[in-house]
Image 1 (cartoon, rainbow, N blue to C red):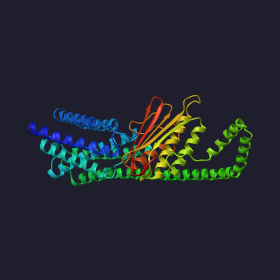
Image 2: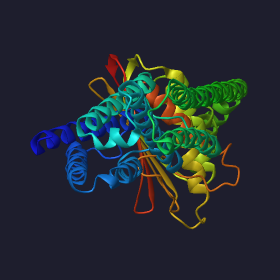
Image 3: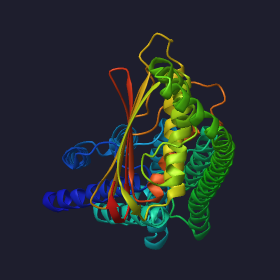
Image 4: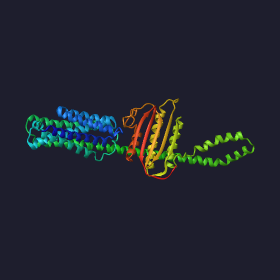
Length: 439
């Protein structure tokens, strides 16, 4: 085969590989960095090195593909460490199994021994092209419905499924080794055995997808429980405020008579002291108006009161329309969990430390932007992901930000966490429809 043709075929095969990596990882994990140029450069370097190695050291191509797949998944895409390893391992497994299945099929149909398939340049490149096409077909098939980031599931689920997938790879290699040792073409039994292993490796993904659905349902259930809890606390707060308002109304006549007597006697200093004692009691029973949206104002008032009780300074600046189409239930849950997380972080600081929470919320065209900053001890954040909880029971803690992330993704939004100068910064952008006048 002409060298130019070999180079062109190598470029085509490497391009399919790079496209498969990009499609699979972006749909399952999402990009860690915003610069598209970075991804273009990395994939271009992968393509160039792949072509060079295929021309000079063909025997190391498989190892290079594996290392590149894991490296790209781990370093360029978001998600937890386990998720990135799992996705890299899953894709390399599918690449291996599809390549071996293609080699056995070519050996069976053309009645070549596997050694002859590898030594015949035309058959080898045709097989490589077919196997890469099959691999990209698998990537498209299993990721066709995966257009949002993975839901966090226990790490051992990922590792167990990855182990099962590589058992399939081992079985695939066992069939390949047996046929190669026989120095004869593959038979129909060999091809069917390989296809069975191939199908089994694909089924592993659907088991994984069921785990994902279970995790998403569990998150949704947690959201509903939190909303019920918020509603229960809000109604108790309203009931308490009604009782206090009744008490104020009952005592109002007595207070007015006392104020009138102090005024008539020109005891202005005593009058001032009396009002200073009375007015805070009246103000405490009135929910502060931050947005004009009753449910949201109730959540903000409740969380602000909890924070101020813990000597945490709270600054709230909200400029939103009186009406927009984003679910108020979801917004209450997002802000409630974000404030709970901020209050918990501030409570871990020493009493003399400057504890504060700053919440800014505004609209930008059809987007709702939320920025929350709170003082915090140093925390470890998974690149492009969420902070790691420092509690022993990780399965039932660290859920607040995960729930926020799920709701944001469900509403075509984005969320980012970062640490800046002893401050934890949470940025949320959510798609919303605007209506009504701004506050």
